[in-house]
Amino acid sequence: MASTVFERHRPAASVVAHALEHTAHSVFWRDDLPVDLMPDRPPLRGVVDADLVIVGAGYTGLWSALLASERMPGSRIVVVEAQRVGWAASGRNGGFCEASLTHGRENGLARWPDEMPVLERLGMANLDEIEAAQARYGMDFHFERTGQLAPATEPHQLEWLREWRDDEPGDDLVLLDEQAVRREVDSPTYLGGMWEKRSCGMLHPARLAAELARVCEERGVVIFERSRVRDLRTGDGVRVLTDGGQVRAARAVLATNVFPSLLKRNRLMTVPVYDYVLMSEPLDAEQKAAIGWQHRQGIGDMANQFHYYRLTRDDRILFGGYDAVYHYGRKVRAEYEDRRESFERLASHFFTTFPQLEGLRFSHRWAGAIDTSTQFTAFFGTARRGRVAYAAGFTGLGVGSTRFAGEVMLDLLDGVDNERTRLEMVRKRPLPFPPEPAAALGINATRWALDRADHREGRRNLLLKTLDALGLGFDS
Ligand SMILES: Cc1cc2nc3c(=O)[nH]c(=O)nc-3n(C[C@H](O)[C@H](O)[C@H](O)COP(=O)(O)OP(=O)(O)OC[C@H]3O[C@@H](n4cnc5c(N)ncnc54)[C@H](O)[C@@H]3O)c2cc1C
Image 1 (tube, rainbow, N blue to C red):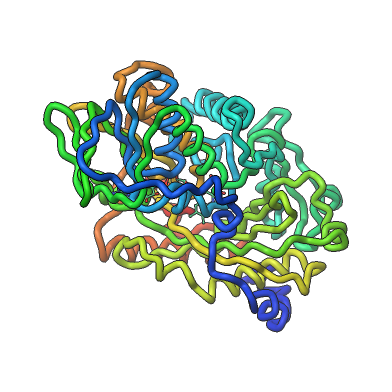
Image 2 (image 1 turned 30 degrees about the vertical axis):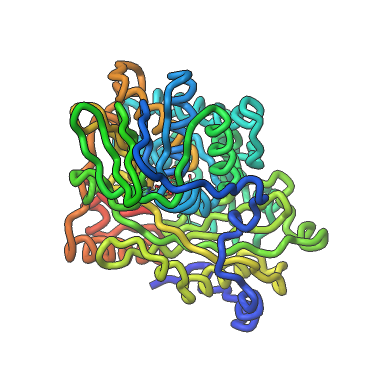
């Protein structure tokens, strides 16, 4: 089998060992939050009445709360969070905020071809709203509308770039040849690239969650932390119960992402897939000059097993992805977050990408669980006679689309017939994953096949072609 550039041009083992020598197992973004953005909120005690109760204080729950406070001024909105605001995926992601609501254009076109013009317009409007939120609500989450660069690192990917350019007319895309892409970011692995100029922004993930919570509270939303909801009951209204109390509300939003759903019907809809991330120390002027990167784009390379990387405000490089690990039994567990082989592989691929930076160290390493669904993007719905709305399954692309999901869930609770609720993507539920052991067998066979395709000039085997034809698959 052919090798990839990351195997052909490996750095010396000592370079990787040196870079990981003092790396803390801790989420950089959370460590980087000023203390006043992390107030300690009380747990839920006793009985609290509300108009709307939201379970989960990641982006989905917090955008739902903020948007609800605008739609229903003066109403009582309560958020109940099992741990801390933004501690899970929302506080530990790559911070790529994309316009796409469909986990990329290709996935959207394969599933909802007729809806794509609407989905793309709504997605771009959603991204514009997130960018505008900084000024509108007085937030600072380090948003930069840099766009995104997709470098080809193997010759067969150059053909993919040309097909992409031909299929997608418009001013957003700039096709770059080898020299041009290396003028943007100087990696010897780059053979060409595509710069999508407007459809993506970079942000500070933990700041976005913390700022949403702060603004929600300024608008009267009440947030309880360290309060896991154990049960959801419905009668005249909705009750969510924790060990210490309960919220009685007219309606509920479930924004629990990869964690076990409070609705039985959703338990098989997603699987947790672990994604690993390194953060470097800040680059000095010489190191920056050695790689260029003046336009500070987010970068995602083009293989099935892809890396994503970006600069922070203080010029560190976040480098993540490639391994996407599923553990038998669908569990979310802290012990899955420290996986030496994944961090060593990431560090090795980093120095293949930027050999000029040999000697640089990584200050942080961490991982998080991605809520993968079989359609790679969120599904939506209501339960309990329309009183409860849910959205989950964002896979690896929820930073932008969680805001859209908040809008959709509030529409669904209001029974509104509009452009969003008429979308097939919103109305139709994808297939669930099978129970174990079939889930682990299927997912691991698919991962193996995707890795093989990356080693065979992208050629997909029978399993992948069959899954493609069924609209099924596995992604991160
Ligand atoms: C390592 C990593 C990198 C990623 N990179 C990107 C990226 O660059 N761009 C992108 O678009 N997406 C990325 N993603 C995905 C993105 O982070 C998620 O799609 C998004 O944050 C989902 O937000 P959420 O609010 O739905 O979920 P979460 O942030 O997971 O929040 C769910 C919350 O619900 C709470 N909860 C769950 N069950 C209960 C309960 N019973 N009671 C009370 N509370 C409960 C949890 O404690 C949690 O706080 C990445 C994800 C990971 C893990």
